[in-house]
Image 1: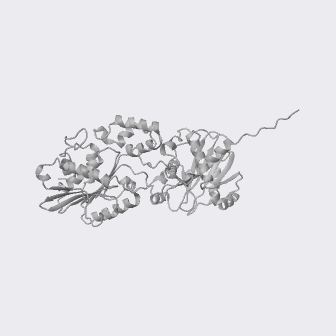
Image 2: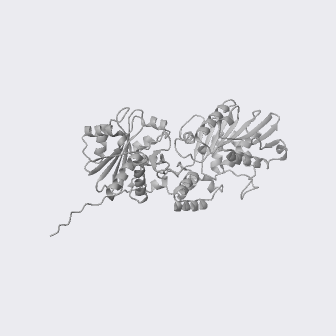
Image 3: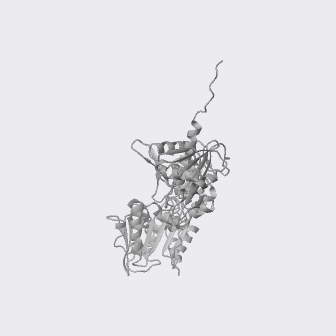
Length: 503
């Protein structure tokens, strides 16, 4: 009989230990059965599941851990099952589920179980093949040293601390190789595409089963069909009801800010950063700037320039302050390819998709030729009245030389990117965005840039823009802030009036 069949049969003999269905037999939802069948297939050594909060992830992990401990489908001697979580308290949740499930087992099995809560959380099971252990550990690599697990469950992997989480994952996976063990990774979405949990979901790998319940980005938070997609257990009566989810979504929309961002991350299972305090704009604040039909090109145009190098992107933003229209284009060198860059930057095929949407192009081989690129930038707004090119003064010499070489005749404005100029520009941009004075067509380039753009603060609470992660590409956001801020300065200047002549 298949391991997955044995696992499902065992899980559905367990009694629900808490909640309104306490005392009833556990009934798996269709998405849970699909995951168990896929993850316990003989050709699979790693199963990855991403689903919204409250979908029974910890209970599923605990039930599988308990079944493996008891040898329901794995009869190796001296089995070792590890439940790894971000903190000891988080690991305790899954361990407690396993312990409570065990309380409903037949008495002859309970008699062979020993529960220990100190110095670490542990359940020991004894049978004719020896002693077997289920242990809960926190996300530190040293906790896994010397282990040889037959099953590892990584609980909420998308929210482990970066360095310690990676160390633990590597230690656990290397330990699994000693016993031909299996790994199950179950979590809500990570905050971004570069997170190791996102990489598990996005990359096709031999021996890895992937199951992700994530709706398309950009939909309203209370959209019913996408709520069903992120919370497949809700239809089956597991976790929060759809009515409750829609009510919480409307509350989050009304409150906005961190409340709405957290709802998208945890309840809608979207890849958005839960760190909202220092984001330049939250995902929903930026989505409010997008319009299916942006305003026309009207009045004078301001062009913001962010010049990159061989690794970073060069970006140009075009802003018409009279109408609020915003456009943005990004450019990379052609070597390496966009697909390879995406893999290196941890964003998978995002650059290729941007290129297909006409938002990102390549120019030059290993660096973007500045004069030729500026010529392409000016051709994008050929026939428009360019009020100013606004640029980072750090690269003034290189840009001024290229502007002269390209034969560009337009007013030049040089700005610093530190706490003085950068702080003023960021605040002017935010104010314009909040007031509905920035409108653009849906842009994956800009969504990605603003998702990676955070604000650093000095002791006086002045801000400047920075990357949220080392491989983030915020060039389009920087160019946009420069363009919009200068456009708002232009609009705020008083119009000169002719002097009154007295007779």
